[in-house]
Length: 236
Ligand SMILES: [Zn+2]
Figure 1: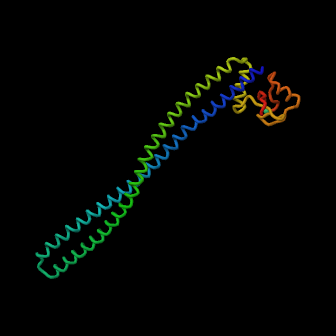
Figure 2: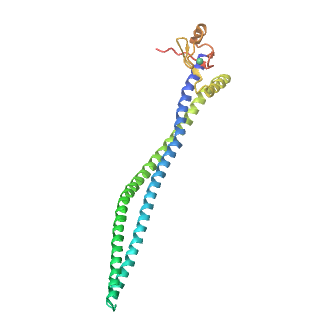
Figure 3: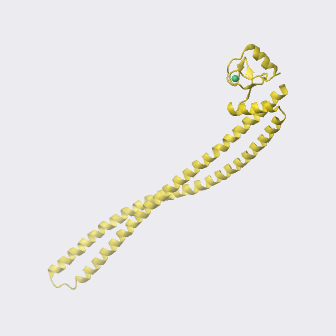
């Protein structure tokens, strides 16, 4: 029995390693999801800044057209100055010209303000875009690395499972079934040591007589509290 207990204890070590590797595999999709989310948010930011710049440029072009229209008007008025017959008409034209020039002054100031805004937004946009390109490359590299790691972990898990199956194949079928059931139901720990009369699986006291039996490793004894299989290893 001692050899069998030792065997399932060794198998459990492998099972613990398998569980650790499986946890790593489970974390991978979450990491990828987080990276994708970050890239999407950065892309949205870049897109939004681009839209603001486009809107401002549209506004600027509109103002420039208005400017051209007014300039045309001024030209027309100025050419008519030589054709008018009365002073009253002449004064009226001068007034129109003055009004158009004032409108243009205002429009030109507005265009300058828009251009300044565009300048500011372009700075933000350029830096966001540079950050996006940088992160896209980094994330690509991280994903590739993660994929390689995952495939290596998958191989490790397969290898460990094979090792464990080999170990368990030499023990009694009932013991194997009990072991597998406990691994599943008892949080991945089926075989436990005892120390100072305590089960190291559930930390409950075990009766003194039972404790002595356990330390002999001569028979299959389960913890009265957590039902795990005892395997005594003297700790030095
Ligand atoms: Zn216990």
